[in-house]
Image (cartoon, rainbow over all chains, first blue to last red; front, side, top):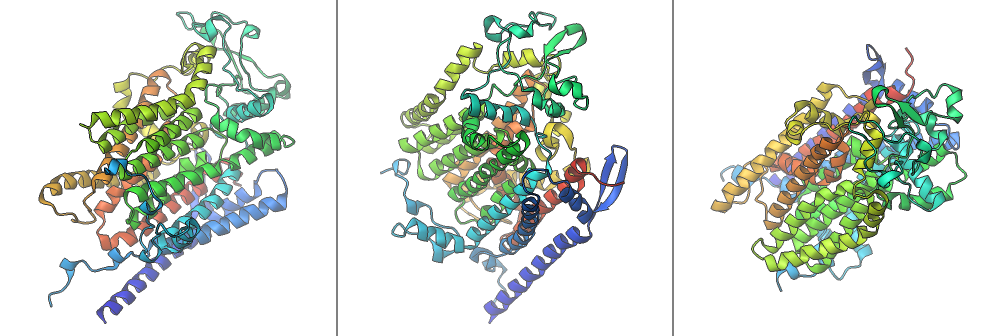
Length: 108
Length: 532
């Protein structure tokens, strides 16, 4: 019973932390902004989507434009989805990490 | 049979963390790989590699053509190997193989550059002169110079010096030879398109480095999920290693081959250095030296690893094994250095480089002066995380400090790890406080070896600065895997075991955000038009 409770407790904690990290990442990508330098003395604030869109517009004139578009968007998708998966996998405890240390057990 | 003599077997490498997937000698390699891919650590590594490829595809595209450090010179080296079937040579005065060409006041004794030997960069690349060392005067906007660019620059009192020369010709040929078949296959492409293709071919080297980071960690800490995840993640998201892995430059291949040496050392430390392993270490060292000469700094770490693993007092064992490693490495690099000596009259061509760059690349100072110079240290730190290209894109100092904070914490944890290891070794307890775990013999030797590798690499950068002020942090990037293991062992020591899953998620998150912010705040706005 205690083990089951602890397992559920661990899973809940893992889901909550994963959701928080993921929300932080997605929030930055959608609503984040940065102060960028136009000149060494002049900075303006621009949103993260605006800045990445500037990169998309400035893709090099090589090869096929559609192919470059596919590379760009598929790379971004893979990075974002992959990073969310990395957060989840990083949070997976090993057996050693999931076990309550002996000296932390309450007295019987 | 002694452990040091025991041959390496497949079942010496159990797949970590999931008992159900532990490979056995009877299973096929394919089966073991499938089992590994189903383990949490295996899945993490596979996802990390896929993310790395996608991230690198974007990195290849975000930087304009030829904007990487010395990218034009390295690209032209590949072209020379692919089309002329030879290595280029440094532009040098005709007397004494390019030596003693400067008088006591720093002027050239011969300014008839038509009589000089060696390679110059094709006129086409003058349009990228802002990225080249040093093609001045740099006026690519003037069409007059595009077809007939400057080939000499007047430096005032010290007179004329050549400009637009092939200054990467002192590098060994392996990286360029590996890329030459692709350059031949894509000969019909424009230089810019070809350059993007060759940039993309740096990605497999980056993948190899991450894989070797994982394998090295697994040799020393086979069941430590914290390290098995965070070490490869650290390497995959290290911004400058990623940058090297998206440009035309032999640096990335040099990092890969030194990482291979480090992996073989970890394997030898864990399973013993038999003669075959020593020969493999020598071969990897030879390949590293044939890629980039600065790989020489790893030799003290090799010697230490072999000597400590065999037992310091066991001189009759480790000296012949060291000789085997040195001999194999020496045989591989011998033809290159014979060619080098015949061409330049020395083994480093520093004199010829000094001659070409003497107006602007003077010695940086004394060894101890630079070692304790805060500005020197801070510049290396800036170059380790930013600067991109020839010191172009500067990161905010507050941001650089925020990167430094967790690394300093990791180093404090590492010191704690060393002290606790020494202290607990006497009373026999093997875990706690926090995340401390008593190292076994292989881990202790491995950590000491990596520490020596990291320190030697840094000192080599300082030493190079005594010759040329233009020394750079990227010369110590080949120890990235060793450094990552040291810092993250320190980080693990500071984290109680139950908090380590959260700790590694935060580390991955921090690494991802570091890259995201660097590219969003600094790199993209630097190169791509942001409307006012």
